[in-house]
Amino acid sequence: MKSMITTLALAAFSVTAFADVTVKDSWVRGTTPAQKATGAFMQITSSDAATLLSASSPAAGVVEIHTMKMEDGVMKMRALPKLDLPAGKAVQLQPGGNHVMLMDLKQQMKPGDVVPITLKIEGKDKKVQTVEIKAEVRDLAAPATMDKMDKGHGAGMKH
Image (cartoon, rainbow, N blue to C red; front, side):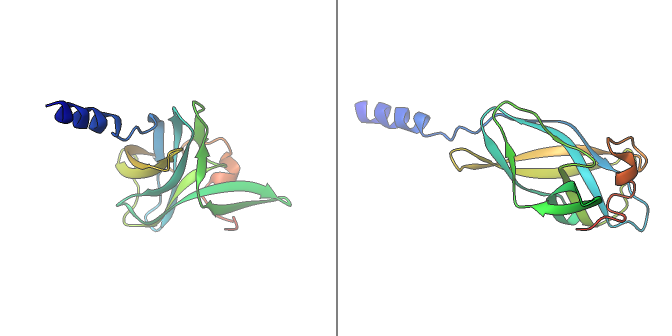
């Protein structure tokens, strides 16, 4: 009996403790019928230091974490291998900055549609958890922080 209680106690302490990750205000920019890429935006907060490793979605053939920066007067977009999530600090994924890029879209993203996105997040203990979100599609002309640079998401930008 004592060994069974010890075993149960050890099992209780070996349960994986994941960081508490919350995602707020998730949305995807709408597309035109011929457009094959768009961005997904959200606010991610992790209770403990963590890392956004990747994202996936059945709505797109390729999903990457991207950043946009001005370099020599030209807005450039590039893929990031990961994105740090500092403990307790909200990380904004927004137009004109860090975001999730959905490419090789399976269909047009129309306002009101909902896009499922899975985020893979690694905690400081190197354990990986998945966070499922449902991002609402907003109009192609949805207001953005950097509207002029973001129209068409990627038009005239270098990857």
